[in-house]
Image (cartoon, rainbow, N blue to C red; front, top):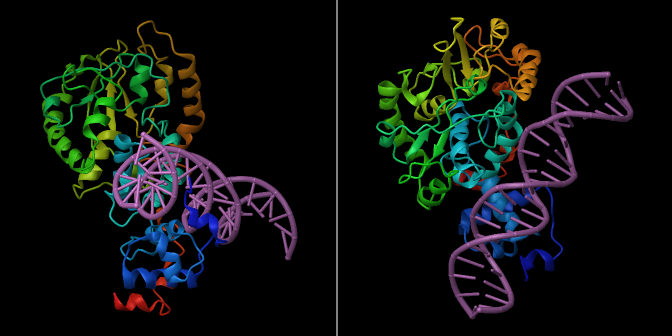
Length: 361
DNA sequence: AACCTCCCCAACCGCCCACAA
DNA sequence: GTTGTGGGCGGTTGGGGAGGT
């Protein structure tokens, strides 16, 4: 197959684009618009392949690009969408105006992924890294059926090892059998061209808000021993931004707050009457007394999983030093100071006089 | 100052799909 | 149905800046 033959036939430039090349490409697109990329290099006088030109335009030269650091809302939205869409960066990018899939992908790989890992969340599955020993899907019907896409709430396992770490994980269930199918039904039937995950979230949120009031606060729902409720905990992203609370009622924020942050209170099943608050998913809060409890209620046979022990030790030695909710917000050693996040290097030339086209726009 | 290490991010690569001939 | 081509996408790379020694 003569795949991208234009690139192969000719000796073309590779690597970083010079300001001159940028100017040529920008002027050409501004004048003739986006059409056949394969002809762009020739027409614009560039020694690049069309594919490279396309990429340069999309990721860098497009005037509607939003530059600079990601906002908290954007970060939250990326987290939320990634939980549903996975590495479908292009689809995620459609929900973030002015952001490119490449930019989001880079942001994810360089920042968000690590942040989740640090907080004990598998960035791929958005589930806790601690092995889920006995997680089971709790099929609740009434309120959750309000959710547009039959996103069911995964009940917490009665084993506290799960409780300690897992936030509610949404499983996509077959609407007919009400059984978890690994998300296949969801992905096959819901994620389609035209599917708007954001709107789905809005719809979902509508159902959830009601569900939360009606149901989740009820400790006996979901077939679990422990009670849990929802708090106004700072979200994952909030935590790394100094615990700033959202007050703008931003949907994306609320969505991801719901997805990622839950407070799980244990105690009803604990004869020692010790009520320990777990800050699930958004971080581990395990008070010192937690250890002293010796995990007496951690599972039915009071044995702790070795892996769990290992991870708790890790948390104790690392997480608790770096991650504390004691004062109502999370502090991490490696918290990202977004105010110092580097802006893209580009802008300089594009806003300068040498890009006459910009003045026309 | 020189060297080393880390890691961000722009760009490339390879694969897939759609479509036309 | 086959082939050629272009476009889109996700994974990966490596240049280079920043910070540390």
